[in-house]
Image (cartoon, rainbow, N blue to C red):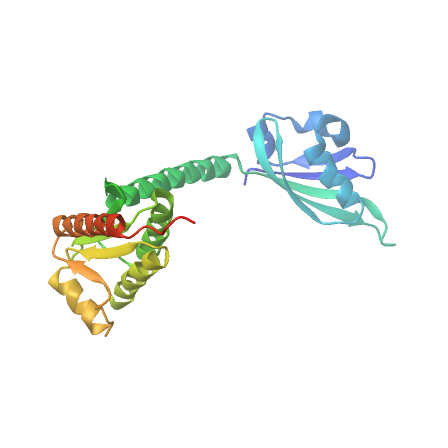
Length: 252
């Protein structure tokens, strides 16, 4: 293994050093034996050794000679239990760290790509003044529905939307738990002072919603997104007309 075995006395003098890790680091053991580790190595090496001389068993990483190391420092004791030095093992983990960084970078890329795909598959669009729409496409599971709920409710508040259209034209099927989430989403929209409208429900999705036994009488459902937008426009015009016809209060 690419490691170095060390023995140091209480003053930090290196009494023994050997192992394939020396070759990897380009070090000759003759150059180390008799040298003071506290003088030739930075604090990330010296501090753990001092802790081991204080009686602790230490596991700590370090960087030296252009190599990443994992170090284990164990106090050595004589028959009387007094600490006489430190036995240390340093393992070259440079390649492991490189692979770990590459994997972490790849994971970051995958997570960013996943977020982009989610954003593209569930875009929140402002299609009319006071009207936002969320066309959902693909597989809709419980986790994705929960994410959609947060995004859509935030958009309702941010855009001061009067209507939120949830278009399911691109959704082939949902399970009962997901269908329940969708109904809860429409109710949550109502609590924010807006109206939630579901459009484009396919037969398979309709069967799942009916199986829940939920009362949909208070939820507006329409055949497609165009019908949903027409409904919103008509409702807003009615509200505007009603507001104009409302009698003014006489001034004092």
